[in-house]
Length: 404
Image (tube, rainbow, N blue to C red; front, side, top):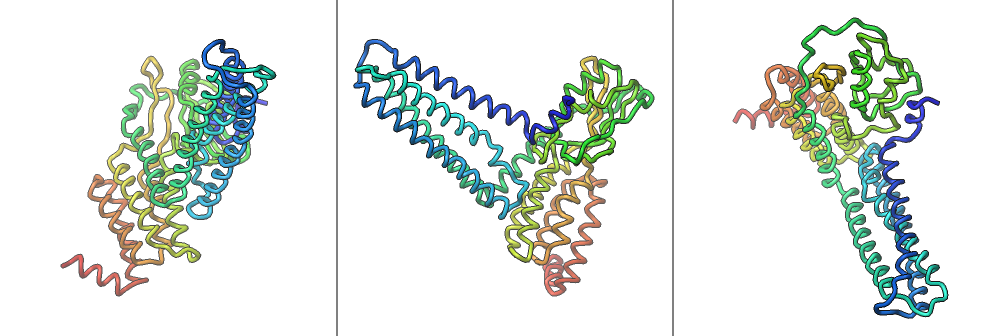
């Protein structure tokens, strides 16, 4: 099996899964080491060993309930979010506090059981052992409280919208500060080969740009990627064009981190997709909650205003010598608009939502340059036409109030 194939089967977030496994292993090892060392502390205040052993076993077994609570919260939030918001929203599932809490619980169980066994039939033991156990239990309770608050926030509309928008703003902010957009000064060398995706459909989650730059620099080649993070790679789909030298598919595809779901790391469209999904579900006949769609549109409008002022040219990544080696495509302005508002306008059966779409587009137009404003004009006309056809009285009233 190639390295790329191994990575593609490693799950949607291989690096995050690896960090979670390492944290659990580290906490378990620390718990075992602490449980062996602390009962051997000589001198100082002492406590009766039998009572301490009972305390440790009781605390260790009681922590199994905490582990059950963690998984119960996870299942509750995932089910609620999938049915109420969108099944593509996985922020709570992937939040570090979830697997860190689980890792801490494993470490605490390891400490309690190991310390109890290490005490054995001793007559007494240092009071540092029960004091440490109770201190760690209090820390565990504080972490569980934080986890519960995060879970409650994850199933509420406004915190969920704010969290999605904040992640979207962070990704867009990284694109705004990138200065490597100038095309190469020297001509691009001749085309050598095209690399296609050889496996079943999967999602391109992120690019290992350092590895791509090293490959291109070592071969004195230029890589022009055809797919951006967030795109679905299908069998036979061209992924990259190689200029100047021949690079094998395995060497390039190992730098593509793929999985079953999109991630926020490098995907500027994901926040728009999630917010639009929440609005579309709210507009479905089964839910019929246009106010939720309006709230999602507020966040969409804020993100669109940030995109309207951001450069959207493809990124030319340069090697240490300053030579552009890798071209990374970015979504164009029309793609952002299509994902953000087109489906909402098509699905809307509420004049309140259509008016809000119009207001959002007008605010974005005030911050956009003339070229991007030209993409907004047809959509404003479309919204006005939908208002006139579906809700003529509301459209007339709105127009009259605008004139006055």
